[in-house]
Length: 262
Image (tube, rainbow, N blue to C red; front, side, top):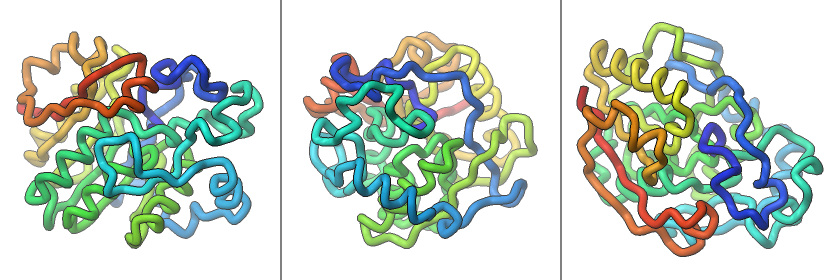
């Protein structure tokens, strides 16, 4: 995921994926507060062609075989290349992270959670969780990611799944007035202690202002399992991860979905 735990979680065999996560800003925008990009603005023809050449369309090895995604896999050139040869920003969007897998599976299995509701997907990456929300009947969706290339990937992934692409926004909203959403989704975002603290406060403010429901997907990273947010969480689902996902994430075996109840 773009905006996810970084390449440290991936297999040591992977060239590009050896890159450690860098300390960049986050990609969040509330609906209507900042200029947002419709899907067309992301579809640069050269970038589209680059992603189509250097990713693989796959639906295997994840918790959601219903969803096709363009990802970096062992059959892709840059899976094996040295990280410095990747010509763009770190491609966090090119991995389907385990927290996002759990969230997506949960939405597909429980469509009433999103049907007819407005949904904000924070740190959308490949867009799988937002796609799952769309498949499950969400009324309005906003995907957000700091990397404009993720916007291209999300749009391509929507098209793969025969969905009309949804907007992608690219600003940090932690210090901005909160938008009103029925449901906020975030997977694999608790990978840094300072970020975890900021997210915790942001989510509390969101809940207090609008009674927004918040669902968090995480495979049990220490920055999440040891954070004080645990006092305000109810586990609603837990999934055994497929073997390919385990191998790409240092042997993590399960991923869970939590309902934030401050």
